[in-house]
Image 1 (cartoon, rainbow, N blue to C red):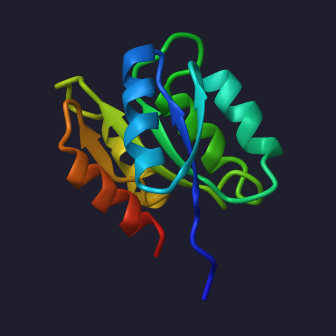
Image 2 (image 1 turned 60 degrees about the vertical axis):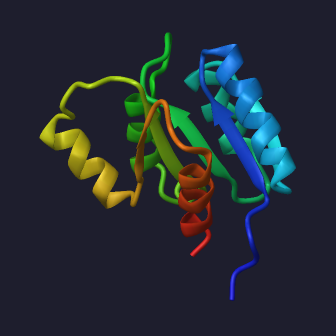
Length: 128
């Protein structure tokens, strides 16, 4: 049985959201790393020696969540060992290609604002 993932990378350009998530996740026993944009997150994920769960905002400057997940799809060895959860405040409909990418990578989508218990349950499901 694979070991439990205890590190979470929170990728969001909103400082308040990152700080709130850090507090909640650390209280739940996780080690939290923060990134304010997808470029830094991608660099960190490529170098990470262990698998992580990534809470990824969809809309960010520079490299957004969909572009980061596109990079994940193209790098099966290093980036697909991590588990991803997409967070979005947008009400827009996702394109069919992006919805298929989320399905292929087994990425759940959580709408902001979200219930903390629902977030923690989603993180727990990504452990399996």
